[in-house]
Image (cartoon, rainbow, N blue to C red; front, side, top):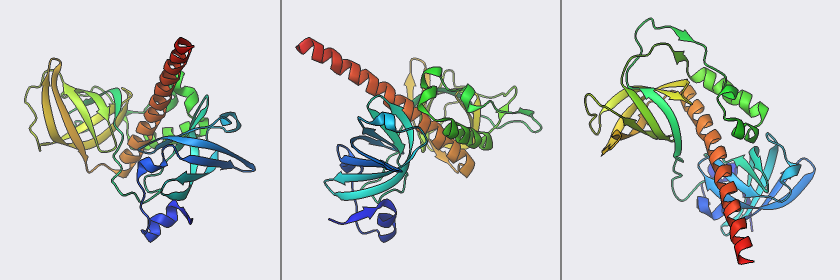
Length: 274
């Protein structure tokens, strides 16, 4: 059985695999002089989770070589550990790691951020944005390495600034992905129409600002106000990088939160059965 790397697959464009084919695959994890075996359990967006008994032998930020033994063949991937918890590691799954038979959808994560549907006035003052390390909830701070935090902070710093005394229509962001957002306007003065384009500034974590354009794709009336689904349009590369970094960080946190809840539920079920 031939072994193909993700890079080779992308270049030759001959062998296609399904993303889910990697789930439940036996996975060899290598770093320097250490090799161990785990099971790939989660693949979504740019995050891949691996159950691993020897997780303590790895550190956040470690570069690792992964070899997947899937029903579609043997595949290799060079990656970096960005999450670690009992019995598990999480690594970056690059968007172009392999050629897939289906389009990989951007993961949509639930958030509690805000935004404004209006461009800033000319001459408006700006101030330095806070560091990402100040924005991370203490419970999740240990899931990302210091080096990666520094890199993410630089990406966020390049991508936006905090604006003072912004005026416009406030929005509450409910969910976000690399391709779009879902947001709520409590008291819309003028309803937005499907297909309409609007300018927006998103306050990531309630502080960080990313400027972009949105195209409204759907709307829904709710008891809390008007809910809109929108697609990003013409976002600058720096903003895209910052958004990807933010979503990936939120994914890691959500992945391990859900995993801990599932383990706790399984433990309770085992005790009940016994």
